Image (tube, rainbow, N blue to C red):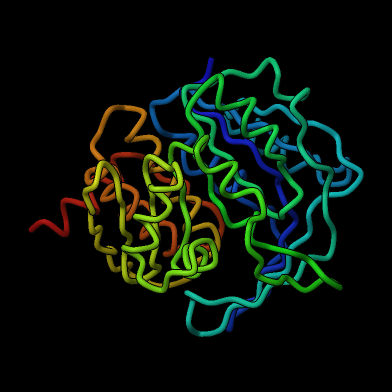
Length: 291
């Protein structure tokens, strides 16, 4: 029985920034797992990957992460190209992986399942429904809003959203994803609508502008903590959610969990690759902004 179990594909990523080009592991599951591994929580990852990239899963296991790997014919292969504005990127998908199944997860239990679909077909409604009977569901909705055509990623609406959202306890979306889901440009109206559709807790990340959390008819505005340098924004949202769910499973309030998550994301953006710090490092950032 895990406190938190993340389900998602590890990807092969080509990340291009104005300064350099890097080939690396990626995906929600990769960044989330690295970010939470040094926290005091019982954590497990369920992923699916091709034999050619099995080293990525092995490297996570070597860091002490409990990883369950299901074979896939291919590994998801993303290309992310960032401009000087790190809040925006151009993305292509060069390979896709096999979807997760209800059967694969039948013996996995957790207080919170964090779902990180990368593409619309990764996880079925039936999987969400089955997991919700065993624990709370946290969802990073981005994958359900991505359709791949000729390697290009197009924004789409989530066809099963009205059926699936009542099974989601915590929903994470960025500003544009919230608009695609709800049709609302006003993020507060979008959050209220998502709640009305069944989500208990709505987390909307706003990049360098911070984040907004809505629960029990209360809005929590979370500021962004300015990083010392902007090096690599890939995985910042996943790092944020690792910090947020870590604090929520420990019983912290949405406001305090959001502040911790924002500080964790700030540390992440200062270095290439995944977050490797500790809770003490995050607290230090919080304290530095309070003085």
